[in-house]
Every structure is written in structure tokens, then in C-alpha cells.
Image (cartoon, rainbow, N blue to C red; front, side):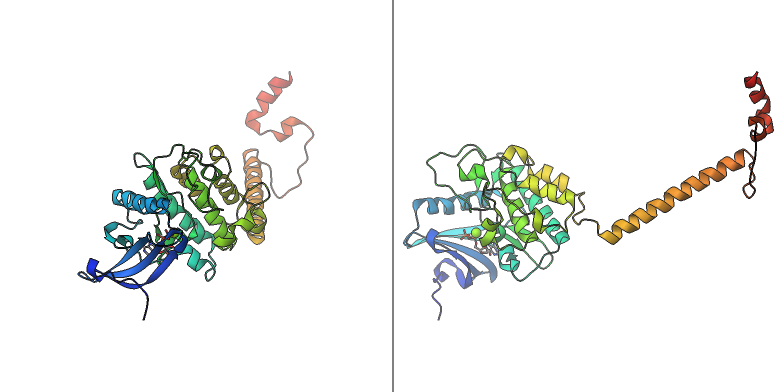
Length: 334
Ligand SMILES: Nc1ncnc2c1ncn2[C@@H]1O[C@H](COP(=O)(O)OP(=O)(O)O)[C@@H](O)[C@H]1O
Ligand SMILES: [Mg+2]
């Protein structure tokens, strides 16, 4: 017998728990919509839970408000919300996918796959940033990025999202997850379209270095900068530079938007050329250069009628030049 709440009066039957944040009074359930037998996600917020503050309720309200305005195939659609004696519930579309955090330990991603994940998340961020005013997610991290068998990506958890950037009141509670939050978010400074890029950069670095999300702090040096270069020697210099730019502490040093980060990423080779590949390239270039020099030499020999297979000797320029040029040479000598 499980302890799941009974939502049948509201039209939903809980199947299992997907995740919880007890301190925040939130539990996320997989459920069936009884009328349609459709699988959905019910996110419950309970006031009665210890640690559940007014700001947590605001997070619930914000998620409803933001999700209602969004319409993107890689963001779960808002479906419904209802009030229970102990709190509120929001119902959203179910994505048959697992979070990157759940997969991180069981799956070692190939750098090419990680580039694909980066492109997909940037496409979603581009959609959010192109809205007027732009939407800033503010809690991008492996737990909130879902991936399915076909490598389709979905972005979930808009509880901290903000519509529009701008400065946050200094007294506000800092919202986000340490290690994935850009410095401007940690200090409640103005957020920009570059803010979510930092969190995506930190997420990608976790995947590339096989660092569990809970240990992201181990990548930080004493200045708070993410230090990962030693662990990614197999990556191309260009891809490392791109990642470094994503996680610059000062937002002005990052790409300014998801669109510019995407444009810079797409043409990049992710892997460093291997040693054998480098040697083959050098050998190929040498052969091409030699062939070009030889062809040029033969062409010159042909123009000046120089016998290719004989030793040639000449003492005067007239001996070397073909007959038609002889008069010119003689003229010049006069
Ligand atoms: N629409 C969804 N489809 C499938 N799984 C989801 C969906 N929404 C959330 N989840 C899963 O439930 C977990 C918790 O949901 P989330 O919205 O992130 O709650 P919290 O605010 O407590 O972090 C996520 O990490 C994800 O694994
Ligand atoms: Mg979450």
C-alpha cells in the first residue's frame, strides 16, 4: 500500500513519484488522467509541509503563469491546476524521458552526443529568449533537462523562471542551484539572456567530465571559476574555448544570447584531431606539395624545351632561351 495522495476527485490517479523537494513542499508525480487515460505529470505543492514558505508558493504560481504562455514541442504544456485541502497541484504534459542527472552515472556520453544536447537546449533557450519580454529559466541543470531514446531534449521546472531580466530586489531570496547559478544570479544582480548560458555551460562540463551534478563544486577553483581543461584533453581547442566562454563569471564575457552561442557552436569540431589523423594529414599535404612542385617543374621544362632525361649544360643565356626569344635577349644585351 503506498502513501500517494488520492486525486481521483480531481480526475487523476497517481502512478508513482518522479521527484520531490520536501524542504520546498513539492512532490512531482506521474499520473493518469482518469477520463482520457492519458499519462500526465502532477506537481503538488503543500503548505502544511515543514519548510514550505510563501516564496515556494510563489514558485508554484510562477510555474503556472510561465508554462501557460509557452508553446514549444520541447517544453511540457500546461494542462490544468486544482486546489486541495493542503495545497495546490499543477498538471502538465508528460515527456517520456529521463533527466540527465538520473542518467549521468549510468551513461557515459560521447562528446558528439553532448554537442547535440547543447544544440537542443540552446534551441529551446533561443525560443524563450525571443519572447517579448524574454523568459529566463534560472534553474537550468541536469535534473531539469530530460532526454529520450531518440536524444530528444525537454526542459522542465519553470518554478524559478522570470519573465524579463532586470535587477532582482536585494532583499529577495536567491533562487537557483549553487554551482549552476551564474554569479549575477547569486548576488541578485541584473539577469540577462547570457545568464542561462552559464548554467548550460556548467551542465555540459559536468557531462563531459563525468561529474555528478551534486559534485559540481569539485570543478570550481578557489576564485569560483570552473576549472575543467585538464579533464577534457580529448576535446578540440575550439570546443574548449567555446565552453570557457559559456562559463565566464562576468556575463559580458559570455555569448550574449542563446542564438549567438548556437551559431558559434554548430560549425565546431568537438574532438581534437588524433595523432594518426594528424600524421596522415601531414603526409597528404607533403604529397600534394611535391606533386605541385614536380608538375610546375615539368611545365617549365616543356615551355623551354629542356630535355627532361638529359644533363643540361649551358654557359650563355642564349643557349638556354628558346629560339623565338633569342632576338629579345640579344637586344637586351646590346
Ligand atoms: N513533464 C515532465 N515529464 C516527465 N518527467 C518530468 C516532467 N516534469 C518533471 N519531471 C521529472 O520530475 C522531476 C522533478 O520535477 P521538477 O519540476 O524539476 O520539480 P522540482 O521543482 O521539485 O525540482 C524532474 O527532475 C524530472 O525528472
Ligand atoms: Mg527540478
